[in-house]
Amino acid sequence: MKERLSTTVQQLKPSGIRRFFDLAASMDNVISLGVGEPDFVTSWAVREASILSLERGYTSYTANAGLLELRFEIMKYMKRNFNVSYDYKDDIIVTVGGSQALDITMRALINPEDEIIVVEPNFVSYSPLISLAGGVPVAIETTAETEFKLQPRQIEEVITSNTKALLLCSPNNPTGSSLSKEELQAIADIVIKHDLLVITDEIYAELTYDEEFTSIASLEGMKERTIIISGFSKGFAMTGWRLGYICAPTEIAKAMLKIHQYTMMCAPTMAQYGAIEALQNGQHDVEEMRKSYRRRRNYMVKSLNQIGLECHSPGGAFYVFPSIKKTGLSSEEFAEQLLLEERVAVVPGNVFGKGGEGHIRCSYASSMESLEESIKRISRFVENKL
Ligand code: PLP
Image (tube, rainbow, N blue to C red; front, side):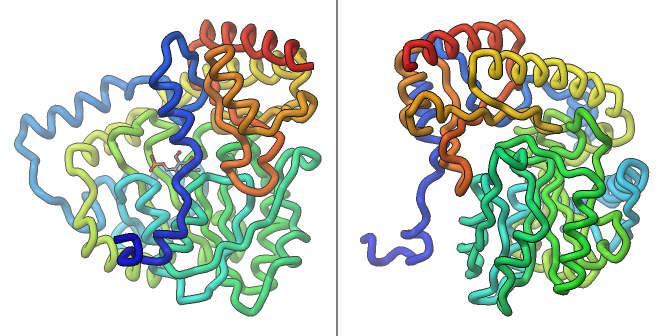
């Protein structure tokens, strides 16, 4: 049977994160720093708006690109918060999470053998989605020495005649690294020089702690070559709603819409009604969550460094990515032994690609109490290994 499957799919490795979740799920008394999702429930106002839409009987499909009212709110939100202007009728598509937004972006852009530059360590879906669309992911490795920030010269080192786009993610999963406006400008200069497109995954845009978020699309000469991937999962604590969006130059958005209409029709209607409320009135809730993550980030960075697991202070998202090199264990060994011996679930850094080995990803979207207990356990574990 195997030979009947697509060779591309046969070559895809299952996500390395799942194995640990499955193991952790079969054990008691586990503290999980593994999952990449908010520990908040979606705000009541958003849930209520969605319930109200059901009570009113709004249960049919929406326009393929999403409710016009929601796209209008997305347009205002992008302008207000990130200073980029889009036409809500032609440039914005509401998708089934950032995940589907990424998928249709790749499929709309890639011809066979086109190369997309990815910056590793990165979100586990990027390279598989590029391969599934027939493209070739070309990885740039970032390291702890530069706080896992892409150095602009690294882009020029991997550009070939097949390079089509650079895929960026800031704030980043798994490292939490967040690029400043100046750092993005230096990247934009190279992108413009080589006439590349940029796909920017801004799913963590609301969650920055030291500097205001900058979208690379807002820099001069960039909007026309940039596709923004974003959504409600992280900043608005709406992972289960499966709602994201794309903002792109009109021609590209039109191409994406063709794929979207044939494969998805539209994003879930009741979720779209909730999202309108989130954008109209949710800013206060987002701000409260952001402050809470910031406190927890500070605690985790301080505590991990105190127990000898070196860790830079990430500017955003809800992950820390400490080095575990001094224990002499590989990332997989560390994560597996920590789970079995101390019942703390983390994700080994190697699953996120180059530069991830020697690190673990800890999500701090967990209660302070759990974080404190996890630090006690990790501390004991590390002492035993030294
Ligand atoms: N992009 C990044 C960097 C992520 O970390 C995630 C989820 O973990 C996604 C995209 C997809 O999010 P969703 O499909 O829930 O919008």
